[in-house]
Amino acid sequence: MVSGDEPLIVADAEEPPDGSSAQGSAQGGAQGDDPRAGKRRKATGKKGGSFWRELPVLVIVALGLAMLIKAFLVQAFFIPSGSMEKTLHGCPGCSGDRVLVNKLVPRFHDIRRGEIVVFNGVDSWTPEVTVSQPSNLLLRVLRSVSSAVGVAPPGEEDFIKRVIGTPGDVVQCCDAKGRVTVNGVPLNEPYVYQDDHARFGPVTVPKGRLWVMGDHRAFSADSRAHIGDPGGGTIAESHVIGRAFVRVWPLSRIGTLPIPETFSQPGLRKPAKKNAAGPLPAAPALAAVPAPPGRGRK
Image (cartoon, rainbow, N blue to C red; front, side, top):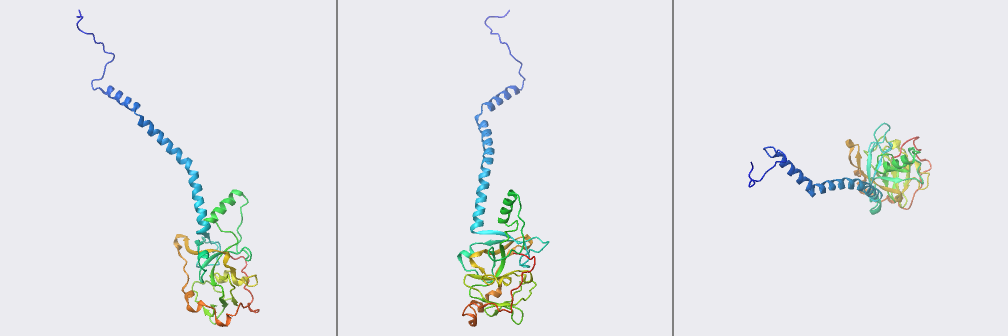
């Protein structure tokens, strides 16, 4: 018999003695009710989606900055031929050097003797190497971008040579030792490779123009090969793209491209007095140096 004063307690389920079920239930409820966990999951999803949405914008900005730098400051050039050997490699079978060209030089100060410059010879110089153009539009775009960053060969109208004479200079070859002279001062040129000692001049460089030559004299179709062209073999200063100041590839040949010491001789500062009256035509007996067949630019 059960007393009416005592309450009847009925258990719904049996609990483990350690209370683990209650703890798990409490923890699960706490996690399900915590709003911070949901926010974290949403934030992670937003970050992943945001990156992919912003990626095209970042690529466009990067390309825009690269094109601005290329247009006004520095451009990389690939050397496809051997006319500047051994200063710049471009020989058949070897990996062409890459150089950086400072485009500010022709804009802010006069181009100096001894500088290596890249210039456009589209109106007067025949291409020294042939660059095949892809027929596919996409490949042409890729080639253009690759040329801009110095990975692929540049256009056929771009050349790279060393400045030997500036406006007013009298350039000639050769003296008794077979050296090129500028304003009557012989140049000591240890950087010259396979010098052919081809005779020319005297030639007075006109105002606004430059006399340029390749370091690989026997392989370079430079100013000597264009004496019969308009300008007497010289190039317009306005056609200079910039000065090559550093070789950046391959890594084994990385280094600067300074002006050789021979161009610091005091006698080079002004033309020789006997030639100061005006431009002198090339002597008829000293014909222009023929362009080497199939030989390279750069």
